[in-house]
Amino acid sequence: AFATGELTEAQNTFEKEKKDDKIIQALPHHLALHLLNQSFSNQVQIKAKYQAKDRLTEVYGFVSEFINNQVRIKSTDKIYLISIEQIINIS
Image 1 (tube, rainbow, N blue to C red):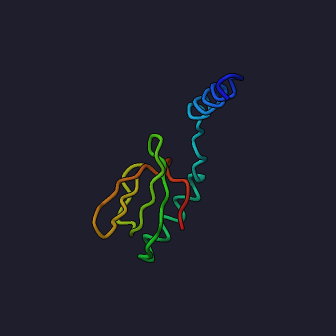
Image 2 (image 1 turned 60 degrees about the vertical axis):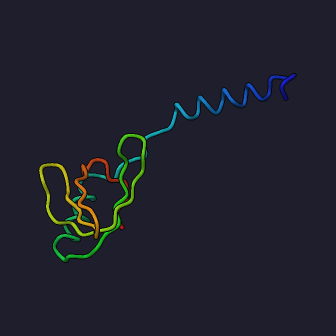
């Protein structure tokens, strides 16, 4: 592999793909708000997946309040303040 340059090509391709990591599409704003509001009104626990910087994070908890364009989710051990625009999935 070294002699043919295949390894170098594979490494270059890998590095390029790492740089080209795409942002996962967020939930449409109105849909995220609707689902979060249902959870808030009915006090149903949700699992929210959101992307902050280059990391995907899942949070389990209850919606406790809305602040500007953010939602506060209380899990058993932590309180999260998440921008609604970063949420990519709610279940």
